[in-house]
Length: 406
Image (spheres, rainbow, N blue to C red):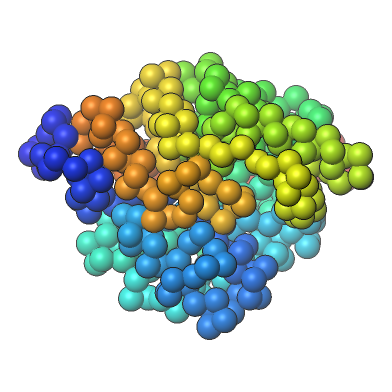
């Protein structure tokens, strides 16, 4: 193992060949992929109509390209848009969970359900992609800790506290603050997630929500798909003081590839698009409606391209501020329409790794980035949960009780 993680890069001359060899030794664990929602939209979850086991042209993800990309573990997002609320959001989330389980069963020769870091390792040993579930948006639990617990039973291993809209108990990065970060119920959600062993995902939340969650959490937190605010000024990115706090918390920021979050010109383009959409009554927080608007708007207002070099800059910034043990990758494939040149689909990860190797990243550090850090955070969260479960039972507190609202 010491030889495998030697401080020097792999010995091959070609950076791309070295990158592919490294990913064979340390298959990447990616924090966020929206293929399940694409399967819903494109084929109603019919995996005969949308055969992700073959090479597709309608998605950015399929199993052949995951293999080419050196992906050994994938958090599949069981996302539902925050335009769905209450029972509708919970039902749609359960449909997403069901779809991921059926996808894993349909391609059981290449995918394996994973709920723990050890199960990720076992999937890798069997030659399959470890398939993990993450719920994107606190609206998916319908203000119910019992629903949160049942999502955990079904295999969901992180919950993003908000999506584009506030929840009644947490402020989103892209909405008007209401509760000042987290309400009392929001803090109870974080505590219950820690007890369960479900990772607290702070992508999409307001900066004050990030800080309040860090103050509340007993376990490491994650950002499943966010980049650095210092390099690209968009509320979806992470401020430096929060990145620095990950060092003591033990958490991880999984740098995303979304052009609007890594490229300042693309972020500015999105601000202009949001203003133009608002003039027509389209809310940029409405993920689906805004996507339809920009698909037409960018014909006359082309979206600026992002580059691998910009993604590298975010990865290195997180490393510099939080430390090498607190940076990972969360591509967000099938969650937006364009990606940086060279990273257009899930086969592109080796190009990013090659760019890092060309900048004299060691094999040890790349292995931490693409796999080791995420598995370490998972193990730490699991260990905290085991300890908490010896002293704390399931919380029966309610939203109405804690926040004084029926």
